[in-house]
Figure (tube, rainbow, N blue to C red):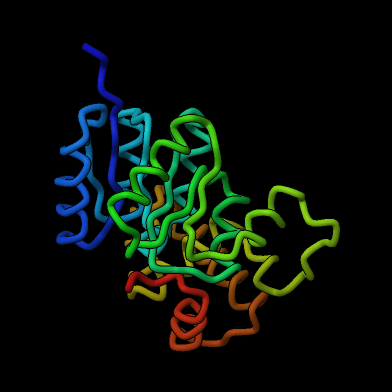
Length: 218
């Protein structure tokens, strides 16, 4: 009997997560070995279970999907990551592929298309939902000849984005330090850097900016 591929699901919506798990269980070659409902837990699940395939939502609490994606590909590049999200914008799609995604699917995809997506990424091919313009992926694959314009957001590091997300979710400096395994002083430094780079001056402005950038779970 063929050995089943190990699958992990990172999705904060419990109903969607359970539905996806039930669907995957109907396919003989896949076995869901772990689930995560926030970004930090998602990374730890990959560390612990070493899945062959990770289904990853982009909007999750504590750490967003892009941060998880970068960490997973750094730790375990052989894990295939199929993004499954509501976001259809060029910005989200390009950022996901630039961060190491193997495929990008919209959540309202059909059962058939999801199977096609899974088969494609498992075969080593990139996949993008039919509802998204082909030019988006083509632009990424061709390594667009022109550089993206630099903005204040581009200067914010991955760790600073993680801190910004947690601040916007209402976590205090001490709690953020514990979640990210860093010191309170480091959190304070990241916060100061964020406010300087983005010209933001209070917690409300930080939260509003994080919302505009799609860092908060929906």
